[in-house]
Length: 107
Image (cartoon, rainbow, N blue to C red; front, side, top):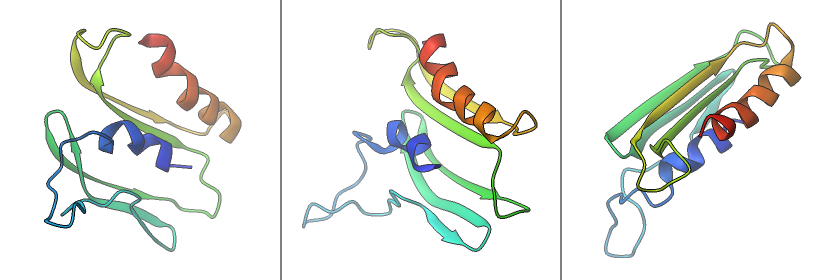
């Protein structure tokens, strides 16, 4: 569920590679420990970042999103980072819908 949030931040990020071509210091999928999800190190256009999500119950109604790169439909457009945190008070489907559609329509 959270993995799509990271895809724009890690693909083509220019991260360091070892001699074998593997990425060094990069955690593509994050880690899960009970109700804690965390990503140790990721890259975006302005540097490195870390993130953690802690949920109080087994069903996470909230969604979050991190988009880094062009903030318009043109690759040459303004660049930056868009961060969205959508609470699930309207239900998990509402938060999921906003997560999947807001940035695409703003861009």
